[in-house]
Length: 106
Image: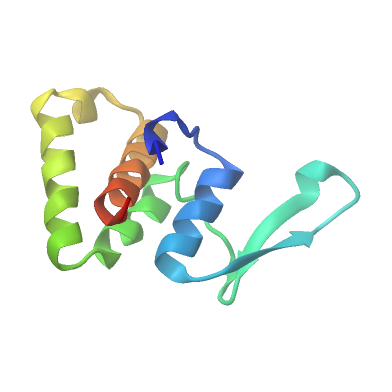
């Protein structure tokens, strides 16, 4: 799967949550489609791809070869100086994409 084309938002957050923290399900918190949110066993799915504080625990979940691959990907991003020019939201999305690439078995 090409995670680099996925935008930040609800679907990316769900994918990250299910990949690293377990299954998710929809919960309707109102009458509009915007009120439809993802939850998992420990509560609402954080905005992993939109908030740097939510994204960092994703990186901390990586172990072994996946952690090494994540560091390689993030090292390439830093070497291009891209990370230092990003907003916190862009950095969160980059962390999520790198983590998903690191554990991708395809």
